[in-house]
Every structure is written in C-alpha cells, then in structure tokens.
Image (cartoon, rainbow, N blue to C red; front, side):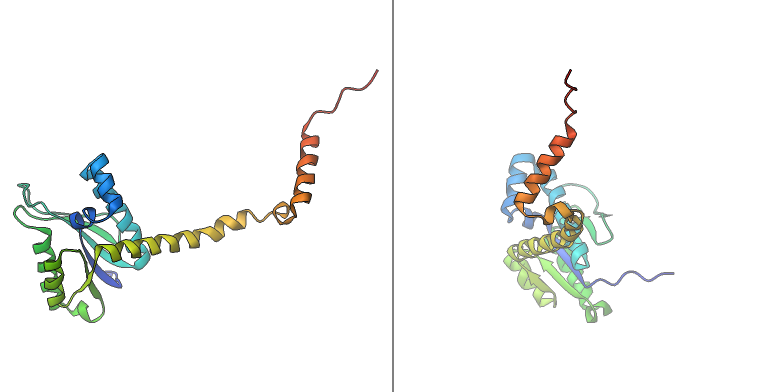
Length: 191
C-alpha cells in the first residue's frame, strides 16, 4: 500500500476570515454572493497549494446551519471542511492544532494557520503552529501566481520565435508589403 504524499506544510485557512479580509473577495461577495466568493477562494488556494506543495484545508463555519460536518477533497493539495453544527472554524482549527502537537509529522512538516483573528493567532501559536495573516497569504498567493506565469511564458515565447520577429521594423514592413502583393490576384492581361 502506497504511503500518503509528504507535503511541505499543512495549511489551515479560516475561509470566512479570508473572504472578509481580501478586498477582491469582499467585492465578489457583495456583488455576486458568498457562494461565488467561496468558489473563487477555493480556486485561488488550489493553485497556490499546488505551487507551494501544501496540504491545505480550507475551513468554513457551519455554526448556525443544522448539518453535520462535511469534508470534500477538491484537488490533491486542497480539501474543504465545513464544520459541524455549533462548531466554529476557530474551534475546528484549534482542535487540529492540538492533535498536530502530538503528531510525528510535526518533525518534518510545518503547520501554518492563515487568519487575522487575533485570539485565534495567539491560540494556534500556543499549540506550536505558525501564524500567517490574511495580508501575508494574499501576498504569497500573488507571488505564486507570478511564478506560474513566468514558467508558462517561455513556452509561449518559443512559439513566437520566427525569423520575421527577429528582423528590424523596416524589413518586417517590406515583408508585409510583399505578402500583401502575393496574396492579391494578378491583374487581368492587357488586350
């Protein structure tokens, strides 16, 4: 039986805290609704987690909704956890941090909690987890997106490396004129 993948870090994200802190997500939430903001955050974190090789758990409160907790795997690197009725995202994250404290993975893997809730920050740091602010997570997501774009750019540039692109503008203009002349039908013969 294959062993589970070993990730660089376990990242716990307080979903509603991030949605309420990132201006882009606030705008989406206010304009299109909370479901759309959740989907957008999920997409962003799926990409970020893959780039960083993080096992990310995006946690959303189900505090006032009378449903049992649900967890769904979105990608290899991202899962979403909706808490049990009466449980906050903070209490779920604290529980995971408390368990991780006694887990052998703590010697080979970081535990990072992304939230800007000050009380939560102090609690998770007390359990030995690292704390990441919502602003820092936004910055790291931006850097990861830029890294992905840079990796993809050389493939696009390679397809543009035609002889015509290496010519000076005057030569390119002459070639364009020649192409235009060649594409037009020849004039009819004179009588």
